[in-house]
Image 1 (tube, each protein chain N blue to C red):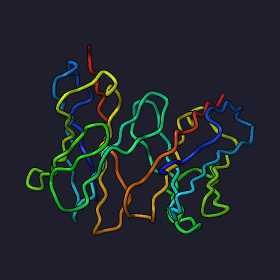
Image 2 (tube, chains in turn yellow, red):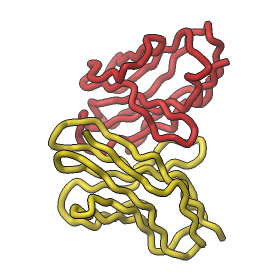
Image 3 (cartoon, rainbow over the protein chains, first blue to last red):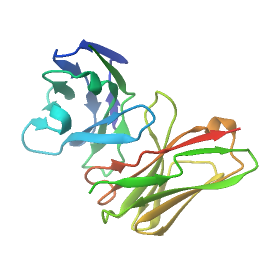
Length: 114
Length: 113
């Protein structure tokens, strides 16, 4: 079985400060890991993914995430937050060795204050 | 181009109505998905089509009926829905099932009265 945990329902940061949105995962095989962002009344937008290779993945809008196999984590980061980054963020995992479908975390609401 | 389109954007229907949601992609993807998303919750997988054949049905009630007329189109037919079916319905596609990134449409906001 595969699962994803996003331990924080809500993250608040000030504009210009670094932000981190946490994600940990559990798979029996090797993971594909994804981050999506959802703005109000919109679908999910793909931000970045880890498939293989470098543990630090760079994505859209200045976001990056670091795959840490020993800690089974894939935290989303950005060096300097913008008010426009305020949205709902979902981490997702797929077990690439077992051909399972993607599972989403519960989501983290990011609020960036001016 | 990573665009998935969905129509309509909003839909209000009564419990005796029949309606359909439509999804279209022109990325040459061979896997298409329907998800249901309640407010402030993650998307829940409903159906997966792979090469125009139903691959996964996640124990969805029969009042939801998917259809894949061709490799670019995916429909979700709705009949005799319940108020608890009100949600955002998201369509997604990927190059193949179980592989690579899923790209999502903007969703259809459904309200069942």
